[in-house]
Length: 144
Image (cartoon, rainbow, N blue to C red; front, top):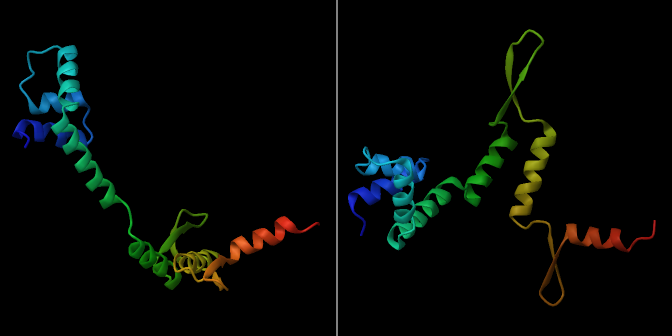
């Protein structure tokens, strides 16, 4: 378990502070030279317990930042339904919110279909092949 100062140090780093600034903010370093602070901060950061906590917090931050497949599908569905707008401007600087272009909606449908493996064709023997790989094979074999 980390001390409150160690936890504060790691939280500061996770929130974007440099090791030096995180150390200054977490410990009484007002009379230390920057070189001393850098050295102590580096040693602290490389402590096994500190490093483990840092990696744990970074993993949580990454997980929270990455859209799940369901979130991506919901967003793509909003594009298709016209709920996601894009802004365009006229010559006078006025802005207008517009639905996605039809090409954007078609691309969103295509992506959703790929996510749901709707372009996969089963063939005998329990093997599946995608339309894209089949088309690539045909185009690679053709002699145009």
